[in-house]
View 1 (cartoon, helix red, strand yellow):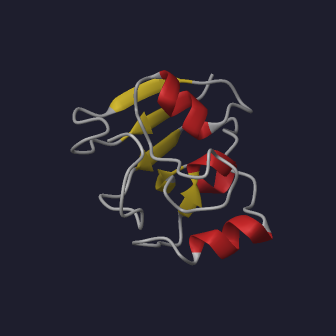
View 2: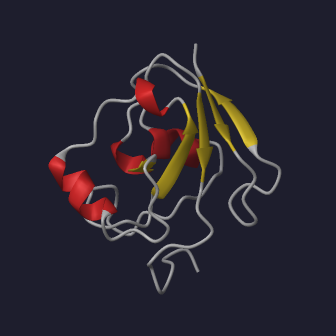
Length: 112
């Protein structure tokens, strides 16, 4: 059973979190089930970049981003080669280490 390690983030998970997951699980849904409130302004429909994350380890185990996700990622704050939208990630069979960026391009968060 793979694990997803969320690195510490000041507001979303100050101490970091390690979660046991099943291959095929959606990353943002797994995070939210554990109380990690990753923004998702488009309700996880790949229409914004607020759920942008950086996969620090295990990136190559993920399926490739499709053209729509790639187009959206071009608009993300702090884009890196290992950036993905967490709403589009299905966990593979390998462990992942994930970093939630400090900022998004979302001016107003729906959760506040």
